[in-house]
Image 1 (cartoon, rainbow, N blue to C red):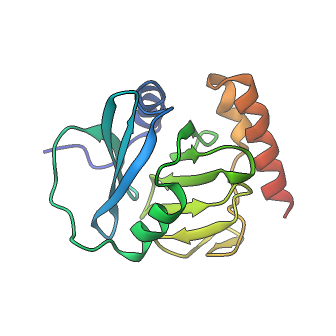
Image 2: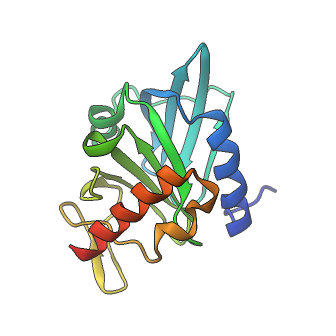
Length: 183
């Protein structure tokens, strides 16, 4: 029987692997397999890669074709609206959490897909300033309520994970975290 959830070490390893294989590619399309599982079809430079994101469980590339719903659900539609055709600029682990931030686009036009890989998990779409545009499930996260319109609050500063990113990514990540936590 397969492994149930990703550990902290699994998250660190997959982020490193995904940086090499999908950063720089564009989101060609997004499909939902079920309410918690999404496939991102990425392409660029003659390369095509499918990435599976499953809320609370996993993220990885796959070569296997899976049956998809004929009509996208509202979350897939919102993801398509904001990131289809946009280049994946950065992927990073947030602090020492099992949380991954995929940044599509840059500067003020950036959007973030945040994947939480613990408990029930979540997939959250935010704008460049981490204002939540759409999420799989609203919930209480400590003292803050995670819901559309609120600013996503990081439980730890993103700067602790950016040592493996470039220094320019580190400084923009730090300023994004600082601005989101001061809201």
